[in-house]
Every structure is written in C-alpha cells, then in structure tokens.
Image (cartoon, rainbow, N blue to C red; front, top):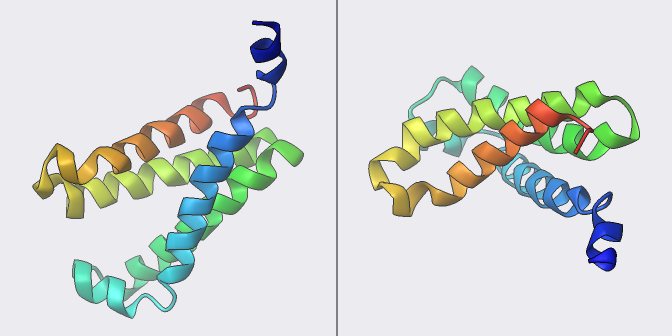
Amino acid sequence: MNFLNSLAPYVHWGVRASLAATFIYHGVAKFPPDGFVQFTGLPMIVGWLVALGEVGAGVCLMVGPLTKDLLTRLGGLLVVVIMIGAIALVHLKQGWDGMEFQVLMLVTGLYFAAKGNNV
C-alpha cells in the first residue's frame, strides 16, 4: 500500500494526459472543419468552435496544473460541453455501444471541472 500511496499525487497526470491527447488529436483533425460540418450538418462557426474547443480543452488540461487551477477547470468544462454535444448529436442514436467512450470522457471532464488541480 505504501507504494500505491506514493503514486497518489502523480496518477492524475495519466488521466489528464490521455484525455488531453485525445482532445488535441481530434481537434487538430477537424482543421479546417469542412468535413466535420458536412458530417454533422452544423454551421461552420460551430465547427470552428468545436475544433478550437477540443484543442483548447487539451491544452488547458495539460497546462492547468503548472499554472492556475482555473485552466484545469476550464479544460474540464470544455470537455463536458463538447461531449454533451457529441453524445446528443452523434452517439446517442447508436446506444450505449456507440457512446461508452464519450460518456467516460464526459465524466472525466466533469471530474476535472469540479476538482480543478485538487485531484
């Protein structure tokens, strides 16, 4: 148990980095958002906001613990908003088998939004 307790202050980095990397990867892939907008039927401005929001969420999650608690919370909140939209617009119609990963990201974003750097 001592070994696991010694890891406790650092394990947030794995969760944080995997969520941030996923959002940065998918956000960068949306530039320019023409294909994303065509697939979803959303207005172009929303496509740009989603792409920028995904990259911004990832950056905030990674930089947050090195600067201000507010950045971690903002990153988590961006994840929550984007995942609610993704689930509602794309994944919900596929049922649980089509949205379990999105729900995991949503709840993880909610965790960082609520806890900030106090993880």
